[in-house]
Length: 208
Image (cartoon, rainbow, N blue to C red; front, side, top):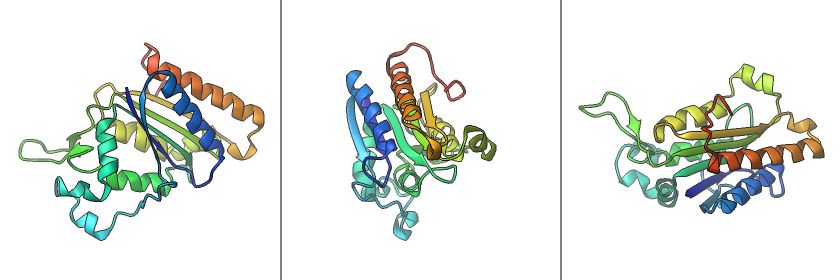
C-alpha cells in the first residue's frame, strides 16, 4: 500500500494535526508506505498562475511547476485528505492543490476524437479518504450541501479506480467541542481507518 496524505492546517498543535497523527499511525500499523505533504509547512502556493493556466493542457510540460506533487500523486494507490472545513468547503490551500496538481494527463484525460468527455487518470488509486473538522453542525453542513466533501468524495473519486473505496469522518460543532468529544472523534478516526485499510466491508460515501 502506498499512501499519500495531503494535510492542510496553518497552525501547529491543532486538533486537525491530532487527526492527521491518528491517520498516519493507522497507516503505519497497516504496513503502508507513506508520503506526507504538509501544504502550509512547505509553503505550497495555491494560486494557479497566468502562465500555468495558459499551458494547462500542454502535456507533459504542464507538470513542471508542481512536478514533485504530481510524482507523489501518480505513486500512490491510497489518497487521504486531512483539513479543516471553512465556509462549508475546502480551504484555499487544498482547492489550489487540486487546481494545480490535478492536471490533464495526470488526474484525467482530456476529450479527443474518440471521447467527448474527460476520462479518469488516477485509476491506480483504489482508496480515497477524507478527514475534516467543521464549525457548523451536521444538519447545517448538509443543508448547505457539504461542498468540500462532495468535491473530494464525488469529484475526485470519479477520477480514481472503478469501485474506489472511500472513508469520511468529521467532527462537527468544533467551536463547542470538549476534550471528551475530541477523544471520541479520534477513536472514531482510528476505527474507520482500520476498516478502510484492512476491513473486508466496502465503505462508500453513503455509508461513511
